[in-house]
Image (cartoon, rainbow over all chains, first blue to last red):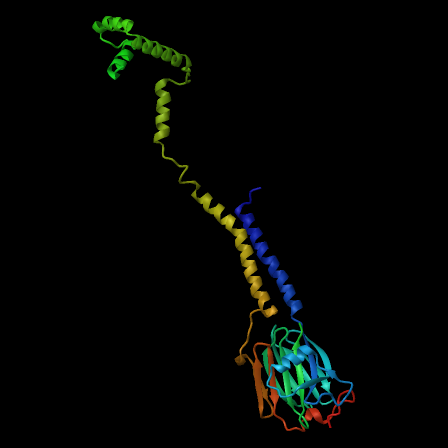
Amino acid sequence: MRLTFTAAFRFGWLALMLPLLALGGSRVQAADAEFQAQLIWATNEKTSPNPKHKEAEAEMRKRLAKLPLKWANYFEVNRKSITVSLGGTNRVVMSEKASIEVKLLDVQRVEVLLYGKKGDVCTKHTQPMPKDEILVFGGESAGENAWLVTLKRTN
Amino acid sequence: MKQDLQLKLQAYLDDELPSGETKGFADFIAQNPDASALLAELTHTRSALAGFEAEIKVPETREFYWSKIARDIQRPDRSISEPAPVFIFAFLRRLAIPSAVLATLFLGLLVIRPQLGVGHRFSVAETDTAQVDAGTFTYRDFASGTTLVWLSYPAENEFTKTVPADTINWE
C-alpha cells in the first residue's frame, strides 16, 4: 500500500503527539517526590547512650564520612518518610523540638525549612535535589556530640 | 586472396561489374579454386540472409509512417521535466515518519531527563541557605551528592534540650 503524503503526515503527527501525551501523564505521576528524613546522633563514643538506637546505615555513614565532620559514630534516633507533590509542602516532626518541612518547587528543586524548639524557623535552604541526593543539617550538642537531620530523596 | 580481388568477387556476385569484365572474371573464377570457394560461400550467405528477412507491412503509407517517427523524435521530451514535483513529494513523504519519530525521541528525552536527574550536576550557586541565626555555613561534596548545612549554635541548642522518650537522653 502506498501512503499518500497527507496520510504520512497524519501518521507522523500522531507518532509525535501520542508519546508526548504519554510522557505528560508520566510527568504528572512523577511529580510526587519521596524523601526520607533521619535524626542522627553523632558521637565519638562507641555506643549510643540509648540502647534502643541502632547504628546508622552503612550507606548513610559512608555519605557522612564525605563531609567535614569530626565524629566517628552515628546512631539513628528517628526516621520519617515524606511525600511531597509538585508545588506542595509537607512537614514532619523529627523530635519533640525539631521538625523539618519540605516544599517541592519543581521536579528537582526543593525548599527545606528546619524548625526548632518554639516552632520558629532555624534555617531555610533551597537547592536542586535529584534522586539519592542527601541534605544534612547539623549542629553541635552537649559534650563532644552533635545532632544531624538528614534528608534523602528516595524517588 | 587480396582484398581488391575479394571486393571484385563481391561486385561480380552483385552483378555490379562492368559488362566488359564480367566474362573474363567468370573465367578467372572457374580456374581459381579459392575464388570459386569464396563465391560459393558468399552466394550461400546471401541466400540465407534473404530467407530470414521478415516482410513487415505497416498500415500507413511509407511516407506517413516515417513522418510519424520524425514527429516523435522532434517533439519536446516532457517526461523529464514533469516528474520533479512527484520526486519532491515522495522524498518528503519518506522523510515525514522518520523525522516525526526522531523529534519524538528528542522531545521525550528533554522531558524525561530532568525527572531522572541524568546529567544534572548543580553548582553551589544553585543552593541558597537563608539563615535565621548567624553562623550557618554550607558545604557540598559533589562526588557523593551530599550537602551539609551546619548551624553553629551553642552546645545547648534547642534540638537537644528536650526529646521524646523514644529518643536518647540528650541531657
